[in-house]
Amino acid sequence: MRLYYEWGTMQVHKRGEELCGDSIAVSRHSDSVTLALSDGLGSGVKANILATLTTRIAMKMLENDLPLGEVVQTLSETLPVDRIRKLAYSTFAIAQFFSQGFARVVEFDSPHAILLRKRKVHPVIFEERSIEGKTIHETRIDLQDGDWVIFVSDGVLNAGIGGVYPLGWGWDQAAHFLEKKAHRELSADDLACKLADTVGELYAGAPGDDVSIVVIKVRHKLTATVLTGPPQEKNMDETLVSRFVGRLGKLAVCGGTTAKIVARHLGQPLEVDLATMTRAVPPMARLQGIDLVSEGILTLTRVGQLLRAGAGKRAVRFQTDGAASLLRLLLEVDHIHFLVGQAVNPAHQNPDLPHQLGIRLAVVREIMEELKKRGKEVTVESV
Image 1 (cartoon, helix red, strand yellow):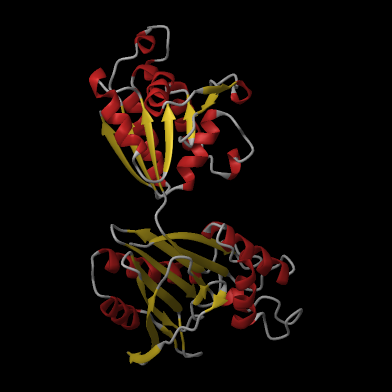
Image 2: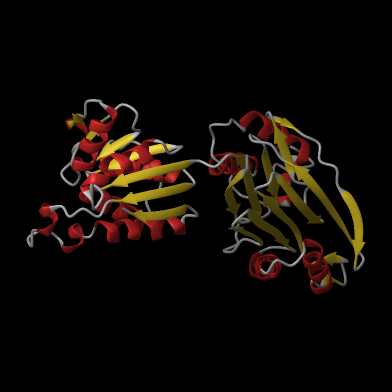
């Protein structure tokens, strides 16, 4: 089965600097995830410009399907060297994670990537080669569901230097910390935050170096299907519901009439939960075999509003209404498929109701665009 890569990033500026001297870029393609992390020499604006230039060159070339070796060659020839200190103006780590289950990693003068498997550091063997006088380390990693791969800048390894750790926290200590924290239930963002928080504590709240963290969580893709609205042709009810309940992943129904059709098909009672009702959103319901059942247009409209306002899982984690619950479900998965019924609901043609309430498909498409901005794969099917 193909693997899916979830990522989380964190950056902390060196004390007294407005910009981080490191740069991170991550993007998803049809069958891969590409990342570049660069550490600019020194700190502040100049370091930020050099690091950003490095990641942008790398990502642009990789997006144009140029071989990783050619990208490294170009960076090695392009990046200048400080004549006095004989140091490159920026270092980098570049990686491509493929859905077939492997990754290619190339590093220049940056801390080695940390691979965790079954919550233990798993050795990664790097090969050395010289390009334009620069020593490049590269490897191919065969990955498994449950693996974690973590990339860090020097700022992580230097944490605590001169204090708790006279020579700095170091790679081994950072890796040991990650072994203890990398629970499968955590998201990539969660683990990146935990590492950043600990690094901040080791610096006593005043980082002596820029800190950058990229966490890749290796797992299988999580999916959800949202059915909203009955099909245009009533005689298609049973066929549509049969398709819907047969899909893998989470199942959500949005709409009272739609929920009744699904309940009839499943032969299960539909129980309304009035405790989930708010002034803005009608109550949810419970239906055995379905993960979430909510009202339709009003709930979907509210989800769209929350997404446009930038709400995330943390913002709605303690809310129990239908919109918050649906938003959490959508943000917890990777691919969402909307089945949008085109039957006309007479209630939505009331001229006293807001215009968007009569356009179910338009509301879903607005949600789709917001979810895509957050890296979700979304497909919409009219029925």
